[in-house]
Image (cartoon, rainbow, N blue to C red):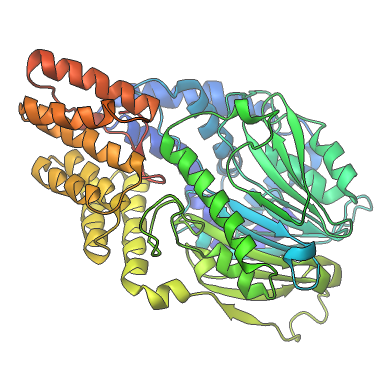
Length: 552
């Protein structure tokens, strides 16, 4: 089946997700060690030999023949190098392993976590009591993965493999992202930064594919999830529509825990929520925690407000929401702690009782585009598919009501792509300047503009941007970030008194990110002692996804 996929969608596969996915880790290394070729070479060798290499050894340890055949098939059919196919499959684990192993080091890799969100409601939460599943898959492949949205219906000649459908992108031949099988089982993946990694783990995408291929009941699915450990952290939303059972399968390198949802509502973002697994969450910075918690609470509150959900469009409205739960600014915004994020590259709504799946067909954020109705796998017929009528639902209210903010988000996406894909700081700065002109009250955009002004050597423009960030109703953490970098600018300029005032805003605050607090204390002490503190702009490690930094 992999060969058929690759041959039929050869051009799309060559220009879509497989074109950029293998480059994500090398690009991060290039950005992290920009201007330091020796360190760059050492880092790439380390990743190739001791991370990717070891994971590859265990890649096919579960059901080797079929998974290996699919990988070879995609490679041969699409004429994409087999190494690139495998690298794309392993990259999420590589990034999270690197994050867990080097997070506290100043030269650590900038491993942006992803922002997936999904929910399932039933009982009193829906108009007919039947299940409704909504999902955004978010990943850092803007402009590639979302370019070719693809739904594949699988029917194997092997008797023990069920029919299933996968909502993916051209060239990504795997049911482990989000998929539905003929028994009515749905799975959707969420990466979770964790302290528990395992270099001998089986990639979670392959494990979930085994669930979709073979499990017919909720318990059978759980049993398969428990068979293997995975390399890093994941939480799978598992839905059995026939049994009306919903759970989060929380996976780490050493443990698996099933968090069953009751009461008619389930929400999942990028964190372990069970008491058994909470301590295994990896703390990176406050922005990442705030983002995942904010999306969780916003979805949870919207489901209560909209109860009961009457239409598929209502579920799409949840997926497309742009209100930042933690901001005092209650109007929708382009970027922030929102359900619809700039890396939403796949969005779908599943109505099991009606045997319908609605899949978004636009570019990121996909949840604010046109959703196309498709038949669920159990009623799909190749003979009648092309002639049957299907519904299209527009979910573009944000673009219509806030056109400048929608354009600001697209300008930000261009900045993100320029920096993360090409390390083009000048182009990123220009796009961020455009974004803040279009949306002049977004503290996240101003913060990122400020950082890129500094990376470009424009300290005066950076100061202005951080000042604007403070005036744009920031969250407490965003406010403290702006104070810190204003302090670093003033200390660089030898304005010791002004710098110390900025650092004191963090040191005297009742709460602060512990890493930022430590950095502010060190900067305060050095500035007070020497009267200045040089800001090394080549070491500004930007986390574009969360408008924050890897280290301060």
